[in-house]
Length: 86
Image 1 (cartoon, rainbow, N blue to C red):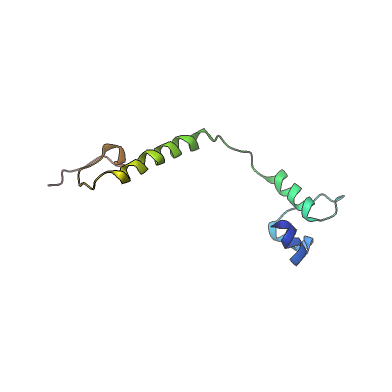
Image 2: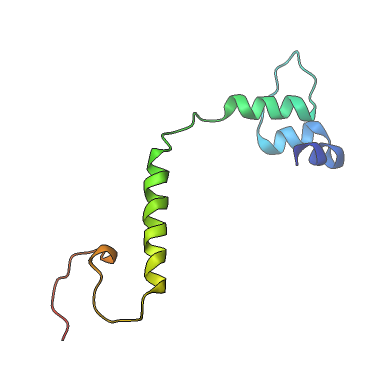
């Protein structure tokens, strides 16, 4: 996408829009813009939490295959019950 944007709008304009500062000794091109964005990218966080969330999502999808009911499913309760519904 950066390459196409540079072809259409020019490298300087794309770099300014992305707020990317290319090194002074480097010519502003699509490659230099991409290198600068990769350098400015924040470090990758811990991805182990994503596996847990996705696993829970898959487990919750299984509930779609159950027959409809009005009884509470403890696993799907986000907040503890505060009162009894009759």
